[in-house]
Length: 410
Image (cartoon, rainbow, N blue to C red; front, side):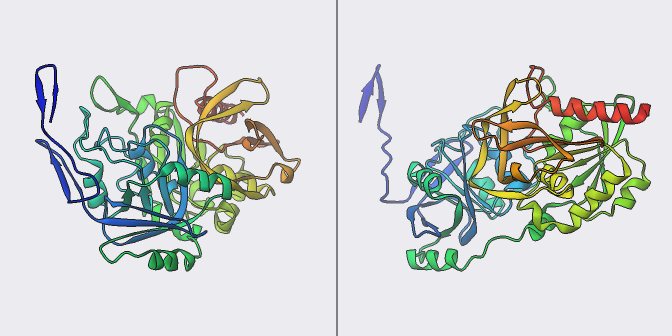
């Protein structure tokens, strides 16, 4: 019992002994089931299960972001990944119904240090644990994420297995991860792309209305088709804010079908996995580029654009997932702070004469921005975000709109 300022605190929470339930009027956290994280190199972590029972296999990556866990979990680019967070407390603000990058959890699993006992935010309507359970997502907490990050940083990104349940053993977890060959990119894209073409006109969230804006048709002068390789909702909303009337199409849509609609521009969205495995998509991009339609590739789409022009990819030693990566505009010399989410990058040594390097990551000069010589086509490896500030990734949206304006003027 602790006495402070005339108040008595008698609530004691035992750790790692009896099951614990901490309740308030809306939420509770149940900490009782063991879980194991096994890496392909044999590293073992023991923790607590905070999601569905079973096992999850995937590429283990870590995010350095202090917030945005809901967005990252629901981002289709997270498909096939076990997401770890370096920030220790994940779940503080719960889950709300408006910020998801898709309708469900896309990540294969979640790895965190600590799940807060109470989630508190005026927009929250669900706890992180309830969200994981509702999405049948396997997750582990109470592990040393500093040690995990050090292992991945020193030894490189590798596959892992989260195994939960009373019968979870180290031997079984290691057996599962060592028998896992890795996710197939085409299967990942097929799982996250839209089943049917659909229009999109929803803009960014507004604080004043606590809802997403709905621009009128006269505010959307640009007719844009978005190839959905795993497009996050924020990318669509940002494009709407830039005046784009969007049609989202499945990843396998033939170029001829899109060109028949005479769009002002085409966006090649971000998505999961390795772009070089998507041979059909690469051929589609080549056809779109040959037709002269303005193109904007983001993330996976940026890599597809490069591959369509003869460049090659390389696997990064450590996947880049976070919100604080500096990127230099080689023309202006200005540096922007960007969000990143990728395990592969364009090999700068493979860039053909037809591709101009426009942006590079600091300090390793990883390819971040490209444009195609003689064609209205640009690409950005990172995750563009709208901003009123100068020298931000929002400039890529402006450049895309400028390409459409130039094409329309002839």
